[in-house]
Length: 359
Image (cartoon, rainbow, N blue to C red; front, side, top):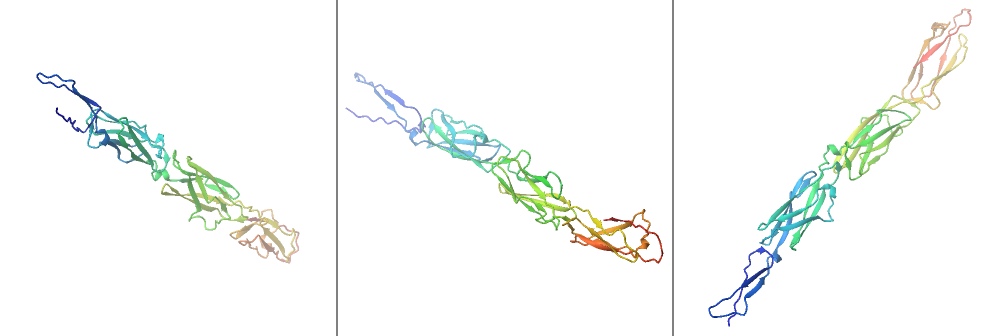
């Protein structure tokens, strides 16, 4: 007898189970059977597929190519299919990209591709990831890849918060509504805290007692704006209109947004001056008149009162020793003024003098 070794060659081709039958023949001899055996493929065991993305980082609305590469120095006699899926560790939602499909590595080739398209939105957000896994029906191990989707919405312009007052002027005791607003249609996946302060350029005399507004307001995730109140307080102080320059500052995904709004606070303090004094003053005598503001009211500046003779008067200004100066000093509530008719040594009827005050 003789023993014969049959050695199938290693062809580096992934293939199905193969069968080989060898029919022996020799002149004058018969054989009990043919030589018949199956050839099993050993190339599958050393094969593996690696997924890669180019580019690995893509902005919203862009695309990236996912490549499946067959490694191990082998090819396949039939097409190899890799079914793609999204790993649960991904931070991007399904709406952030199109559906994942399959990659085909054609027979005899070592690579195949799939194009993943990302979707754009009007949402300020951090970069998100799509962790992509793959499965091969022949059981070849597939190593996944990660695609980072960067926010295309997050331009500086889209991260800018604007302060918008409902009115530019508010009287003491009143309230003006103000909105802190992102650009039209823009929202955020995170709350945005806006810090509010009185800015340089506000009227110097405007202090914390004159106006009230929150130290911070928050634009909630998913919202485009927040509305808040600026309250002008009453102070019983006669003063000129004062300017509040309200400043905002917020950090929006790494960008510092600042803005200012001008609000003029007008004085609503009662400016009525009450005049009291005697109805009759004798020549050579003195009559004291009090010019008084409402109870508790003062002025930041002196109030000068001008006296004008009314045409209905029967006495002349010359009948007074002199026309007194009337001024309520800054910080005072009233002033007392003496009126002194002159003694003219003339016998005459009762005279009447009306002085009309104005300020």
